[in-house]
Length: 237
Image (tube, rainbow, N blue to C red; front, side, top):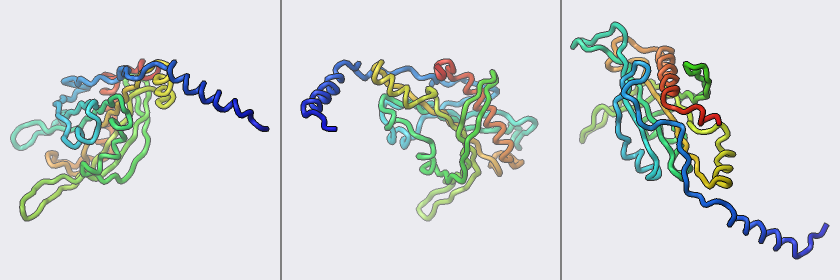
């Protein structure tokens, strides 16, 4: 069937003119995650940290970071100096700016630069204390840490590491982003929350930490933190 020659210009003209009826893009929707970290969460104390220069330089300038070293005393364990021996969790939240593609990405992309060799990955469903469930990504890696550096040589130590992360936003990310940009003239702000913990032979802990122990503690930490820091009503709307 032949299309009349005047129909194509008419169709294209109508399509392009529709652009002028779309709202201006620029407003940014608030994120469901609270970026201001609490002093404590579920029995852990949080010590805020600054993002590294590599993190700041890799992503857009309007990207926001919240990072902390989180410590909780191991029951009944005291070191030679009489101090209680802690577990440690490294917490990181990255909040995108207006340009999602250049201000947030999966942690797997930057972990190798932080010394991680990822050996396995999988999905886990975690349950909040209030019964709500959410999906996470579980990564197992071996992390190399430089322990000595001089003109002659560098020395590295290797540690088993367990990491969980999940994105914080809306359930149907792509379609809601498209709808908000076209109908509401608004960009979504997306974030991911990442937590990691060493296991095996940890330098300051006398007894080896099993992967199962680290897994249990990391899951509970993340569930408690997620319930405290995220507006779940906004996530599921």
